[in-house]
Length: 103
Image 1 (cartoon, helix red, strand yellow):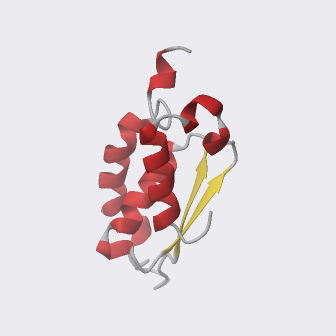
Image 2 (cartoon, rainbow, N blue to C red):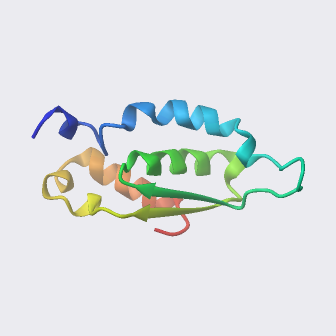
Image 3 (tube, one colour):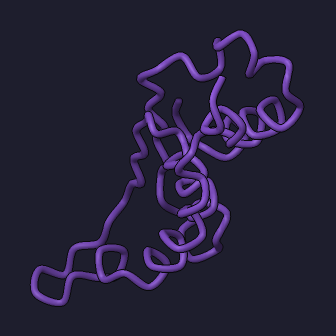
């Protein structure tokens, strides 16, 4: 294991807050002033699996609770042997499953 293995769910977790802050105010989630269309879904796909934490935090925001959140796990994060034994991994996985609409 190297130092990247100590970040749950991955080494990109440090930028989750900045991305969430940006997206909460991003034009992509507001009505399109030209077409009048609104976003109806949040799709997160990983790896990196930190993107699912972004989706979860957006979904927890009252402003986005009507959006459908779809989490696409393309890598067996929840089946990696040493991750299963870590409490933080178990808590994160359960929380993601509880908040998203499809995974």
